[in-house]
Image (cartoon, rainbow over all chains, first blue to last red; front, top):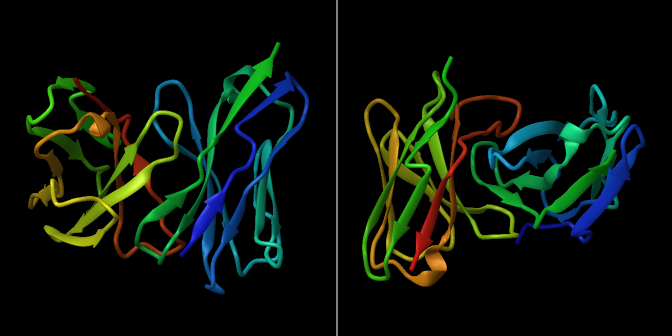
Length: 114
Length: 115
C-alpha cells in the first residue's frame, strides 16, 4: 500500500529565513507525481508545487522548491524568504494512478515568527 | 471563473441523523472527489465520481454514499451519523482525462459536527 509520512508535526521559521519541510513516501510505481498542498486557516487546500518523478530536475515555483530524491523516496519542500502568509498546514500527497485518489500525509503546521 | 464551491459551510447534526453535503466543481471539470479530514489529520479519500458513476472508493462504510448530476455537481450523503463522523468534508474537482498527473482543485469544505 502506498503511504506518505510527514514525521515533523510542527515547525517554526523566522520571517525572511528558509525552512525545509520533510516528506517520505512508499510506492512500487516507477512513474508518478508528488504534490505539496498548503491549508491556511481558511481550510481550502491550495496546490503549492508538483514534481514529476521521471524528471531529474527539482520543481520550483517562485520561493518554493523541492528536493526530490527518488531512490530514497524523499520529497522535501523548501520555502525561501519566508513570509507571514506562509503560516499554514502543509501536506505532502501522492496520487495512486493518474486520475485517482490522493493519499495525504498527516501534515506539518508551519508558524512564521515576525 | 468560479472555483469549487461547497455548501453549507457548517452543519450541526445529532447522532443517527442523515446529512447531505453539496459541491459544484470548477468550470470545465467533470470529476468530483470527496475527502474527510479529521482534526489534526490529512484528508482521507472517500470516493470519486465521473460520468455520474462512482469510480473509486476509499475505506469508508456504506453509510457514505454519493451522487453526481449531469451538470457535474455532486452530493455526499451520510446516514446514521456517528460522533466519529465529525470532520471537515472537502470536495475536489478535476478533469478526468487531464494529463500531467492528478491536479485537484479543492473547495473550502463543510465542517460537520455530530453531537
